[in-house]
Each structure stands twice: as structure tokens, then as C-alpha cells.
Length: 466
Image (cartoon, rainbow, N blue to C red):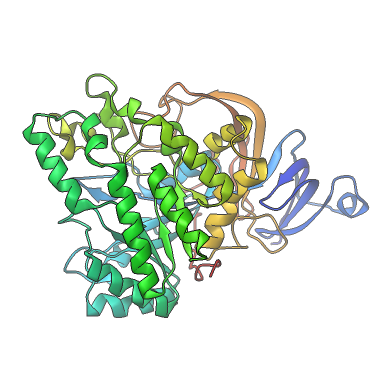
């Protein structure tokens, strides 16, 4: 049975254009766009028509950095693939790229299969995977080639978390050399974990145990140093590099300097670094634990450099690093020792709205909003133009966005499976109204109509910037 949906009267906003256009959807894909009121648009017939007058019609968001059900610090991220992708849909995100984890001593295949099993049949929106490399050896290097063929085309390494995810420079170089040959993209958590561990030990010995010390020991200079080192290793290997969750002005400067040399080096930041700061980590009592993530929140003055990086394209992507832990029962594992607070913040539901607020506030343009939240993440990770834009042939992942609706972000009303909001009480302008995933309505005028199992696994091609 063929089905046709017509979206009429909205302002279509993509990374490239803003145009008053009607959008015709056929069998889950964009069939055509035509100027509103034109002869072509007037001739279209459909099974259902959605009135988008006064709304933006935008591509579904692509969040290329989430951690559903991630084991960390003796517990698990509180969102499952079911709850997390449902919350993503509520926030106008229709594709996530999550991280499958290889455990030390095990194969990449075992880790990947574990994540396939977690996600299969549970997702409300489409999903793909990156692979975390915890153990670089001859066997896992060979497996990287097989994963690229399977559509898992990016690999994350950690310069942080010794004893858990950490890789030394030799292992990082080997993985980069392999990705240089097989077309994969290395993603780097760039913090000097060896030095940070020394500072953690010294802080705890001084009795500095509160959450705010998490930010003080994970120094911005140690993020910048690791970013610089990762860039040089990538140059030696002749490999592209994508640095995740960039939080500090000094790290942005390292990326900018590399890009000025014409190197294939890319960077993402996250809403928490754009909207929150060490002021949150220093909230009284144990409240600061809600904001413990790595890289950590920085002093407020770093925000200007991040916004500037997004405007100059020295930072290309805003993802969430969504990794929620409940305040009660999870974050409080670190009472009396900040180093035991599970690292991560909830945010998959808030990203598109917060970035629209950045448009309202004059930090970025409407098209740049769509570029950093939809189009570039799709291109960076081999999903474009299937995802990230509204063009004939693209998946009909479409969001009707009300740019004038006002809302207050709160744990009372969010859909993430976590007992607090990192943005509690923040007033913003703009709200998701209706969301289609491959032409199927998952949010209908602020009602969830989707289902677990609608979301499909999407194999990816290699990075489209190389």
C-alpha cells in the first residue's frame, strides 16, 4: 500500500536554504518540494495533509553521540534504547549514533553484537553505532576493517580513564594507521587521563571531595594538551580525526590551528558546555553532582570561544553525549568522593530546543542551527543525504517546529528516564510540535504516537568530508 503525506504552508529550513515550500512524502521518503501556492504544489494529492502554517519544517535531528545503557562506574546509564529514543523523538531528533563498547580482553564483534541486541526492536527512531576500542591489538585492528564493511565506520579511543577505556599513544597510533587505510574515522576523548589521575589523588588527599573538584582537577590545559597530541598522532598516521565533546577555549585553539593547516581535523561540542558552567558544579550541598561529566563544565568565559568556533566552523557539530544517571541512587555513589560520581548528563531531548534558543539569542543563524544539529553530523558519519536534510530521496524524517511557543525545561515534563534536568527552570522559545520518522508520525501535535521497534539500524558509509 502506497501512502502519501503532504506538509503544507511551512517555512522549510535546511542547512542550505530557507524557502516557503510544501513537502510531499511518499512511502517514507521525501518525493518532492515545491513553492507554496505554485502550480506543482497545488496539483499534489495525498492521503493526509498536515498544516504547517507559521511553523518551521526542518530535518529530524541527528545526535551522533549518545550512550544508552552504558555501563560506567559500577552502574548503567538510566536511559534504555526504548526510553532514550522516545525522548529523542520528543526533542525532534530522529537518528542517534550510539557507542557499542568493546571490553578489554574481548573482540569488537562481541561488543557490537551486545549493542545490536540491546537496541534491536526497542528503538522509536533510527539508530547507528560507533565502536569504542578499549583493547587495541592485532586481532582488533583486523576487525576494524570488517566493521567498516558492515557500516560501523567510526571508532572511539580514550586518552582518559586509565584502567577502563584508556589507550596509550602507541595503541592510538596503530588504530589511526588502520583507519587511514580502511576509511574509518577515529573519534577521540582528548584529556590527559594519566595526569588527571595524579591530580585526583592529590585533591582527595587534601580532603577536597565535593563535586566542584571534578572540574578543578580535569584542567582545561590537559584537554588542550591531549587534543594537540591527538592531532599530531593523526598527522603521523595520515588519518582524519574527530575530537568529541570539546569544552575549553584552549582545545578549540588547537583544532583551529590544525584546520588552518588544512588538516582533516574536526570537533564537536555539546549544549552543556554552551549553556552550563563550573557555577553549576559548585551548587551547594551535593547538587553539583548532577553536572559531573567529562570533559567537565568550564568557567563561563569559555562559552564565547565555543560559540565563535561554531560560527567559524572550527567546531562543526553539536551532539549531546547523552549519558544520564539518576541523582538518587547513581550520582550519589560519589558522596564524599567526587571521583566516584558517574560521569554523564541527560540531554538528548533538549538539544534541538537549546540550539533554537541560540538562534533566538543571536549566537547562530537558523541555517547554521540545522547544519550543526542535522546536516553536518549526517555527513560526518556517512548518513547524508538519507538523513540530515529535506530533499527528494531523503528519508522523510521531518519535524514541524513552532518557533514562537514558549516552554520551561523541567524534569517534571521531560521524557528522559532520569530524575533531574540539567536545565531545570530554563525558559526557552521554540518547541517541537510534530515529528515524522521515515514518514511515520511519532509525535503528533505533542502526543507520542510512535512505538518501540519502529526505529531501524542504519549502516553508514565513511565520512563524507574526506
